[in-house]
Image (cartoon, rainbow, N blue to C red; front, side):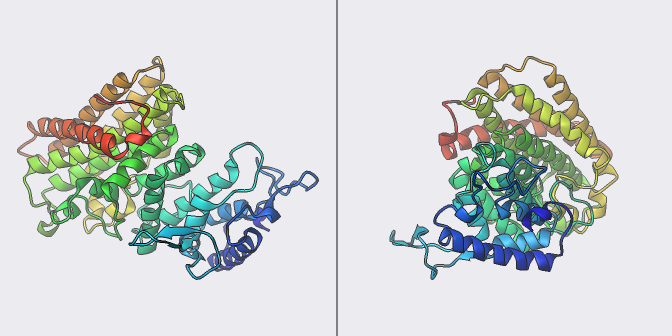
Length: 447
């Protein structure tokens, strides 16, 4: 039955009920998750239950998760549901406030993403099952089917979606191998990150009592992300060409839309960032550059570190994002649906914002297509400098486009403000990855 769920769109209530029973069976065959569920392990004489994929079809979780990826509401409910409680008979431990080991409670997300010993499949990495897990998480956190882009009709993030995002970021921060050892999951995780950019930018601001909530407006429920977790999460996502491209391209669109938003004279007073235009442009550029710089550290590690990825693969992945974005610029794709849904969302979703982000993204893709044709071999210093130069130019272009569109009296100054903010943001990325994610680097120190 689970194999049939790889195709079609199933009723949410059916998926929820089915998922509950499947988890009950999983717990029965794995002693509450403590060992591989042997009932799902493919044996030599067993028939292939999935004749069109790269897996045997013997693990029902694989097909079920693919079904969930088409049903966001059911996926959110499933991952936030309990797998085991502290009162159940199991061996999962945590430490209490006094350092004493006590039983832990696990959600279905905790179990599947962190603890499950996946039954062996074709290949060495159980790629199909884990990839379907990532697809289901994409649907569960974003509110739309995996593989699709958000639209104006996609509602803002709910408390349940935001809570799952928090768990995902914290989990990868705690053990980056959960993503970097399974990079086929990074395209989905990168898309998730792209749709939580307002939350991620807030996380880098370290602002408990200031105005970061007005600088990075969110209409739905914000995901509360710590700076260190965001840093480690982005370094991990940035080690995959697909993950890197999803966040890098979307962050540039977000930056351009955000500059347009804050320079608009039509912005209601109660939504206005209560600082000068100089401080506004500088801070947007700085936060955007920290995101870009942290991703650059991840790319740098992938290219120069043990993974030995090609710099050309990263440029190619960025260039390929152009196909997904064609005709979608201005709808807020990558900005995050929570941002579009602010009270002046209509202004953000079209018109000037489309022009500003289009200009920035046109240059992003042009630059990537040029890099694809260049020599792929680059050292750490060159990768870092290229990323920094690119981010400076793009933030300047975004600021100038927004200033020109709104006839800002500071049109001849915004490029310098953006340059200063971007330089500071890259310094922040360098310092913060060195102190918060040093264990993720192979003795690579960005200059």
